[in-house]
Length: 271
Image (cartoon, rainbow, N blue to C red; front, side, top):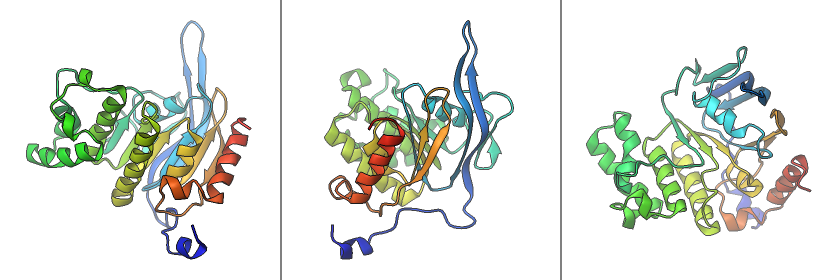
């Protein structure tokens, strides 16, 4: 990419003064009690402004998914910590929040089309509006030809794409993604990365993405939160200074991409 081309590209998003906070964690820790207690998270402090795309990386078992579940109201933090979503303490799943975890939650007796629209229907979106939103979402996810199929008739990657569509159709203000593309082949993963960024560019949702892929984190995110070995805590909060729009071919060839990926690798002990 030439210097003159890069000057006209949109800068990587950076919240301006007065931007509201989407997610705020203060002193959040978690110990799972049992025959042997497991300390999953040491105190974590994290502030995510509205509209920011944040990736969370770290070694397996460091509490990344636990942190996401705490934000989603699915797991209670230990007493003494503060968890707020859009300025309100979390008590159950906050409104305006979409979640896609590592395994899909599709209902086996419903078709792909019905599953993708289910979350929006449960959220009270009118039936006609759900019917309008679902077909373009299926097309974007490469599932148009499978609208009438059931989950058992799909590959694992296709089921995960449908789960992603189920969350996106609800048009959430905040989207929590826990390794949603891990089961996909490289080409489909790249395509969905680009489509996810396109949707984010249009809607400016707040996104928290847990991923084990350094390259994916650098390609997608405005900021990357690096967590330590268990019990996990934040060891680095790194801003990704790469212009948007981004695409797999040109972005990954940039020296900024390589430098950021190498820095993350060192922080995570990969190199």
